Amino acid sequence: MSAYYWFAVPCRKPYRHLVFELHCPFEATVMDRNQLNERLPLIVDSLVQDIANEPALQHLDRVLLPNRDAIVQAIDTLRQLIFPGYFGKQTLNRTNVRFRLGELVIELCEVLFDQVRCCLLYRKGLPVNGDQGQCASCDEQAAQIVADFFDNLPRIRKVLATDVRAAFEGDPAASSTDETIFCYPGLVAITVQRVAHEFYLAGVPMMPRIMTEYAHSLTGIDIHPGAALGPSFFIDHGTGVVIGETTLIGTNVKVYQGVTLGALAPAAGQKLRGLKRHPTIEDDVTIYAGATILGGDTIIGKGSVIGGNVFVTSSVPPMNLITAESPRLTYKPRRARGDNSSPFISDFVI
Image 1: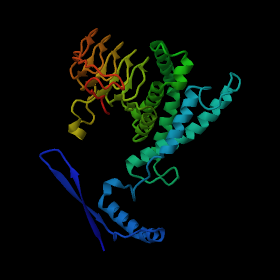
Image 2: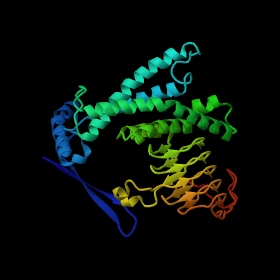
Image 3: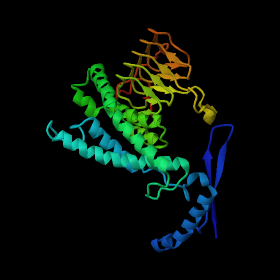
Image 4: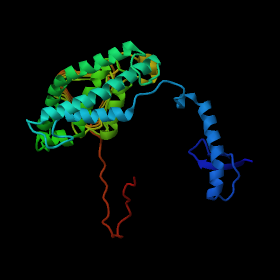
């Protein structure tokens, strides 16, 4: 027996209202816990049918996906390797740091190999059964990718050192480089992206995006792993920053919160895959809060400054200052609290 309910939602013209029909597969009766428990099999049957009807929302009878929790663990371990003494054990010194780094490298190597291998098997559509050898080329490729990553780790640390200095030198509120490493969300997002970028260049599917989306969830800063970030990159405050896949960023670039470096025509979707869709930012550029810069052909020339809240879709020559026309402000008097002698002027309500 089914029950139907109708409810109206008021709308703006030309629609006076919308009427929705809500179908409930159960009688509209007073419910107790025992009745709820009796309904659980019907609920499960309904969900199973929905899953069968919406194959895009399920991952069944297919190869395993990479383990997101393991990849997040790898990021935490990597931060301890890159910034020893800041994260993880706090009692490190020049004598025992070698032993601690050895532990971290062994732990990280195992996790990275397993997850890179899983991602390669996923791309080939092969199951992960725990046995190496089912795809010899995947095993070999995973080992080589992880080895190359460890070989490149000193270079990544050197670049991150320039980011740390840029954050400290570019922010008068920073009291030390320790503060920028330990506290600044921009440096967290940049660190994770630089690591993820190595796996992106190596052609590892899925895992680089898991890494950067984890950093996105922590910081509010969304940097695609494909973006190429130059040294001495600083994101100040950071919340709401979006940097697209094919963005190229030069040396000594500073970006404030709410900046978007995006694509000009995202509606074209998959047709644009592999094309340069996002802007190029040359050296010594500063982009202030709320600015939006779009398009793969858009180049912001060296030394230029992009003012806050501007919308840029064409190239800017070097050494230019781009600002939007200031809005015209309106001033209206307000009465003091408790003053009933003047006409009422309300505050804004948000």
